[in-house]
Image 1 (cartoon, rainbow over the protein chains, first blue to last red):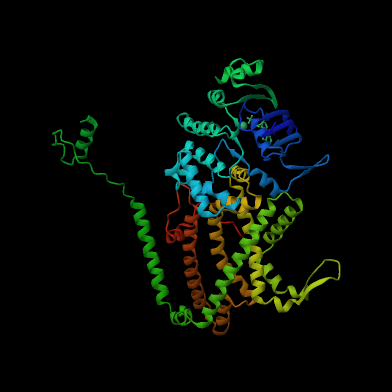
Image 2 (cartoon, each protein chain N blue to C red):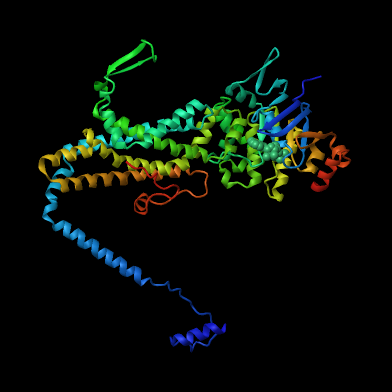
Length: 254
Length: 324
Ligand SMILES: Nc1ncnc2c1ncn2[C@@H]1O[C@H](COP(=O)(O)OP(=O)(O)O)[C@@H](O)[C@H]1O
Ligand SMILES: [Mg+2]
């Protein structure tokens, strides 16, 4: 059996006194799409940010593709990694944010080409060609020279996806990628994500789009108050949830 | 046609009430005349003309002296010193200020406190004191040594007096003082950038240093440049203080002249004309930079530099309230 892409065991995280993650166990196999659902404040974003070490895990283990995130294991000791080493591991993990977070001083093309040039050391001309191709893939070939402020929310989010893909990640994290979008723009972004899943990308998606979760997800995980309440097949979790809390949440969302 | 329109036409008695046809009238908008403003403007213009006229005919102003010294070699040399001093002090101030800003925002408590201490000292003491201090620093340390503290290991040893010439003292005083102010401006700029920008950069594998350089600072520039432009223009004028240590800047040389000729007022006019000319010139690159770093925002500033000279700079931040 191959190593899972994401393997979390008893992950805990506290902000001061507030315990946000209370022992999360979760496994995402290579090439699978895992959709995370749960009420606001349940710790979904925090967990996602732990996966690429934007937040430090307090307790438990979190491995991506067999490597601990943010630490190196030596015997029974965990040594925290240096900034550079953490940065190197993050290259393999793409992240897409609710509020896009495109770089406003760079054009769409420059947004996509920036880290291949600066981080991966690809030469500028090649990076621009590849960036152009990626923009084409998300349907924005004609917007390459636009600044983020000149793009709609849906277009910005698709540029953000292209930007993450430019580093050729093996895992993509999406934190409510369509929650800040006008309803008519949601479809375009979900289409891009659907294509990505079809191409075999491993994805962890925090979303309230149950339609997308049911259609694209391989597993659906329902979180509440820092614990995984229920996880399993999308149909089972979404259509016949076992837990009361899941039922209550779904009745509000659907 | 609505009734009220007719009734007003009738009461104004413009003889148009006969136009009973329903053909659309041609309406002309007449702006309100601000008679008060016109009168005030005329009065002010007359006053200014009178003042200029009286100055022009005032023999005590000695226009011939002004004319003689305006392009004199000594004045020109002072001008060159003032200019390089301004540029060098701003370069020193901005680079050191950026470093201090980054330290102040760092997680390391020691570096943090050191940076805060620097700002506290250099912002909290008068610039004039700092200028004179650097000029006389040789009285404090006869020699400058670079080595390991509290040991006898020394890598470099030089006479303070031979390094600390008036020009160097002036540059140090102006540059270090500017660094304290610049650091606060840069810090505000960095903090104005959405933290989501750093997160996005980190998630792409950028190191904190690269993130600062490529993502955060370029965006912070928009907030940094307008007040730094003001700082530069301020610096140009502030260099006049170094005349107290005879650093051969424009003001030093002006003072040298009137100390001998007693033509104080004409020489001050020469100085003012040059300072005005230079500050006007400096506002041109400022406007350019603002446009360059305004990229990606819907509104880039398009006011002419001349216009800004008279309207008091851009609106983003006011003056830093620097007391010198
Ligand atoms: N940096 C932080 N500092 C303090 N509290 C935080 C921080 N980030 C998140 N939290 C808190 O953690 C809880 C979980 O937040 P989050 O993971 O964003 O939930 P979700 O994404 O499921 O809505 C919330 O109560 C939130 O206020
Ligand atoms: Mg969230």
